[in-house]
Amino acid sequence: MKAPSRVRGYSLVELVVVVTIILTLTAMIVPVARFNWTRMKEMELKEALRTMRTAIDEHKRLSDQGLIPVELDTEGYPKELEDLVKGIELVGQIKKTRKFLRKVPIDPMTGEAEWGLRSLQDDFDSTSWGRQNVYDVYSLSERTALDGTKYKDW
Image 1 (cartoon, helix red, strand yellow):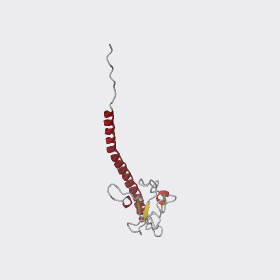
Image 2 (image 1 turned 135 degrees about the horizontal axis):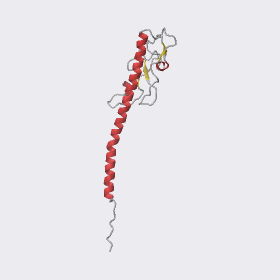
Image 3 (image 1 turned 60 degrees about the vertical axis):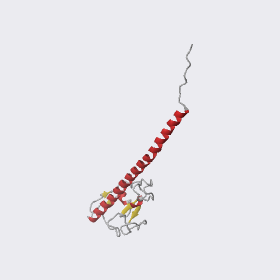
Image 4 (image 1 turned 90 degrees about the vertical axis):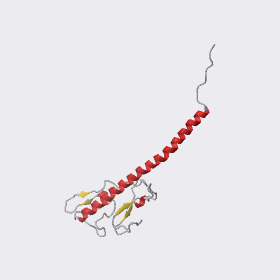
């Protein structure tokens, strides 16, 4: 005589428990992944702003030293952000151009290479550019950062 064969497999209760555990773990991982993604984008934004502000400051330093011709109303700052990419011819040096940026960085919050600009003559919190020069840059994103501030205020 043959022994009766036992049916092997999972019961419905066991499957429900496993699915519940997986859903719970997923629900905990998604917010952490979003937080890390946002924090990474914020670090990219800070780096892009630091790079452009350093290039603007370097342009101003060289113009103060008389190595870059100063246009009227610019106070030694670049006329446009693109001037930092195109390069500026140095005074007294034949065909020598100084570039300050390889390209205008992409704003990680908006995904575009467009930035808010301020002139030296504008108010510190102005959202419109006076077009005299480029004294400062800021993000055009209206979103709020993890620390509660607006990205455009960085």
